[in-house]
Length: 185
Image (tube, rainbow, N blue to C red; front, top):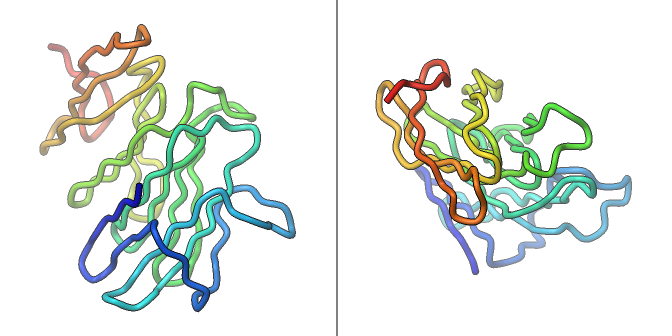
């Protein structure tokens, strides 16, 4: 099922192949990368602009892939990571969603949330706030065991649900936007 995301005059497409744009490899692949697991296409207006070949790391659990344009980056979440690719020069910054290598199977990518200058990446257990230079500003404590989703962000707080007792054992949380620390109910 094709997905698209728009921001200013850029557009992400996942439904067609362009041979006129050289691919940028994202993820772990061999020296001869071969066929990617997924391809993300970015248009600028009606013209092909960038093509990302996504390679799932073999030791990381993969649930889904999501891509967004945010603050001069193409942000791609997949497997146990988020990769930011500069729209200007193709420079990549990788954020591991796990503290161990290989990543724990519950530290898989769940969701990207962006609004204004806020970029959040959710794993199976926590939320990462990412800064404009591609750095981790903070990561929350565990907010779930098998899935974390953001539903709302305002000027001070992030609200969402974490799944603690799968399947269906979702519990609400509220954390501070500037620190990622829990806010008492």
